Length: 226
Image 1 (spheres, helix red, strand yellow):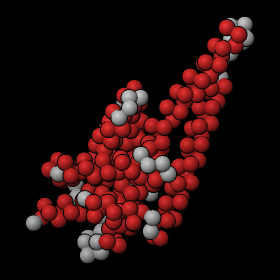
Image 2: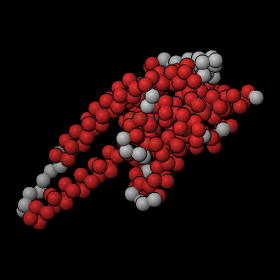
Image 3: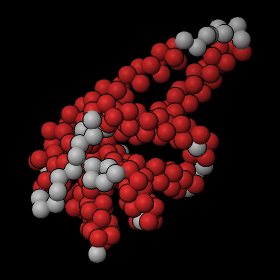
Image 4: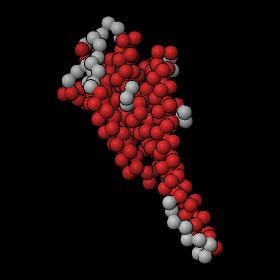
């Protein structure tokens, strides 16, 4: 696992992937900026009570609380937004890793664009809903970080493994392989979840996660054949 993670980290920032990396980053920043602008607009729409009510302190407190909640809500949305944007490039990343690192193996089959889009939207929605449900627990020190790693590690591990596995085997076989190695896949997902908690690097987490999961799948698939 550590060797695969280090290998995936090197490849994520290697020249063959830089064009996709910067394109994904630019689109991610644009989407996050739109989210931020929407939240800012929502804050300005809060009605003001004026200085007549407690000398204006009520408005001040409401603005502070609203700004705080906006930040708290926006932070958990960073990873789903990054995942949604990167979803347009994950098939390309997986194919490139397979071609460069496993040239002797049969190439994977790219999923149709519409299907990939549906998968990316579905996964993003799941990430948003689950993380928003866990939001109250994210306010608890220590517990928040551990819970984030566990929840997102499971979701990321499952989704990214299936993304890679379905390039090579039917859904039923991919499901069997995932259940047989659920602990290994979960740990790989946790590694990606750890990656998402590092500022700046979290913007590249889906690219890193896809690369890592290609190596993970290849190891597990090879082991199942022996």
